[in-house]
Length: 61
Image 1 (cartoon, rainbow, N blue to C red):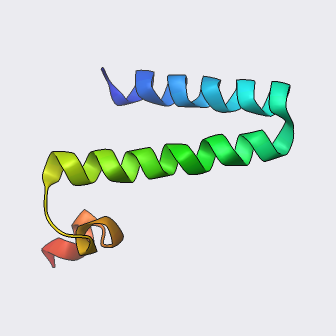
Image 2: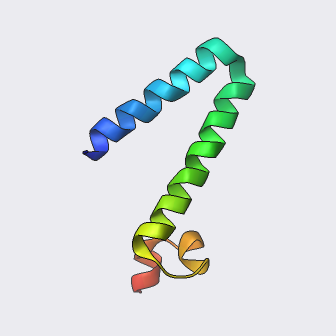
Image 3: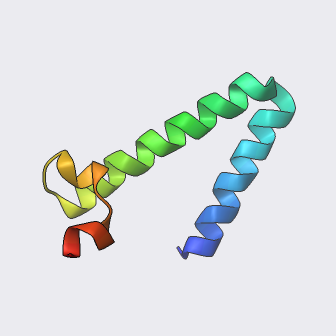
């Protein structure tokens, strides 16, 4: 799945959460999405917790 399609799906999920659940649901979905992204990146690339806090470009320098 391409990043454009993934972005479309995430945007759609956030839009539905905002429309039907209000701003609180929008923030909850956004926060859980960020947590899921961090967990998926950690599992895919391995490493320690510092890898989640440091961007790839900063780590290469």
